[in-house]
Amino acid sequence: MPVVTIESLDHEGRGVAHFEGKAIFVEGALPRERVEYSSYRKRPTFEQATTTRIIKPSSQRTAPRCRFFGVCGGCSMQHMELGAQVAAKQRVLEDALAHIGRTKAETLFPAIYGPGWGYRYRARIGVRLVPKKGGVLVGFHEKKSSYIADMTSCEILPRHISDLLLPLRELVSGLSTPDRIPQVEIAVGDDRTVLVLRNLLPFTTQDEARLLAFGEAHGVSMWQQPGGPDTVKPLKAGESEFLQYTLPEFDLALKFKPTDFTQVNVAINRLLIRRSMQLLDPQPGERIADLFCGLGNFSLPIARRGAHVVGVEGSATLTRRAAENAAANGLSERSEFHVANLFEATPESFAALGKLDKMLIDPPREGAIAVCKALDENAPRRIVYVSCNPATLARDAEVLTQTKGYRLKGAGVANMFPHTSHVESIALFERD
Image (cartoon, rainbow, N blue to C red; front, side):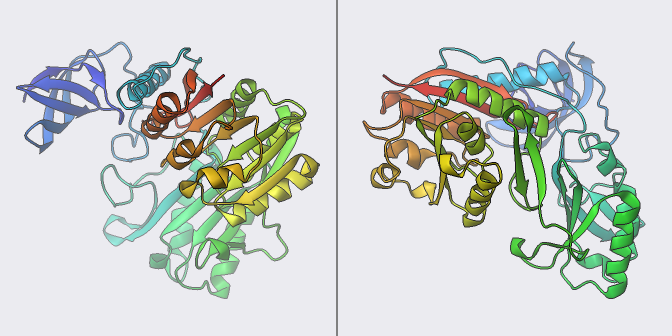
């Protein structure tokens, strides 16, 4: 087996080395380690490989807490100390800004980080009837596979959810159509936990009774989803269709349905909002846009600080939810919400929002390139950009800094998904 010294990590958390003129991407290896590897994919200029033996370990290496690490595809960096993970993600962000965005932040913000375990309050886990493995499996997919991992616990899920993985196997096994329930969606609110079973065939009366009894026994609410997202509903008659999460620093409570988009990491979300408000600095009398506003996660803190917020979102459902949350928190007079496809933004559609003093952008992985290109001389002087993809943030940063007159005043990461290679970040752009 060939042996290499790992030089760095790539954006997927793999060790990077070079051997005989090729770049070697080695899963499970850390910078400065001397490792033996086995390639599973070979191309003329690179190879993808797995670590077979660690000859010289890194001081950053640690024992993975989860005994299914390496089999389950949910985590890729549990073998690296949490602080080192954050530092690696900061380097991924800096490299993306330099190589894709051709820019550099004037200031590196301190990393935002929190609990490393039990943080995942939103998850979608697979369900599969596998007679060869003893029946129903419930969990995340195996690494690089469509198979469901044979796991009995999960360290990144809250303990009360992890403890349900085995009981859920037994529950689904006893239903009338265990092979027609492909997934369970988990949503943990401040007030309760909901399990949404995707059922491709209707539940029988006996199924419903069994599900409700499971919910009572384990202190969770049982829901079903027989069709699209709009068909989600509780099995228990009269049960509220909403959960809620709170933002105590801003005296806010936001309601959501289990299938609505919300951040998976409640602790990091609160810290990210705090950092965003510090950078945005909303003031009474200002009009501030919140683009890709969702159900009001950033909009309502902006309004709570006294500014008038203009929220824009592509989903009519989430836009309505944002307006409802604003009303419930007494912020209707300081907020307005509009439905628009921001991936097709134009200077005209942007101008229609009226004069804006500042702007916050929190787009999906695709980024906000159309929004950035639509900005003109009347654009807000300050932009806070929250990103879940450093590559598209860097691409958009190039437009803002090279053609729109903004300076990248600062950027930093938030460890929204510990033990994974996912990089969440926040950047501040300003112009005179």
